[in-house]
Length: 131
Image: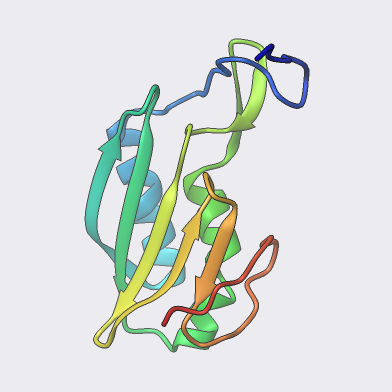
């Protein structure tokens, strides 16, 4: 199979991949603004950094889901690295939980977001309601 590399589908794109300390600072700042705390952070490295961020909130689920697009943008903003412009990280998973468990998940790598509340998340490409 012959590959194609162009502006839309470059081979081995480079990502800014900010350090863990930068990401933790972004999480803390967004947490203060949107009412959550970090529950866990794991940074996978398929090729470059791909954080899995899990947060805990006491906010109303519908209200929180309405802020997910802004939260993800604050944690994984677009950046330029090595001439490539795109998200800061190769992959990015954001999950929010409350006392009843996970209720929203945003996955940049798969381009999908779902919310237990059934409310549409702004700027999403597909909604899957969890079983």
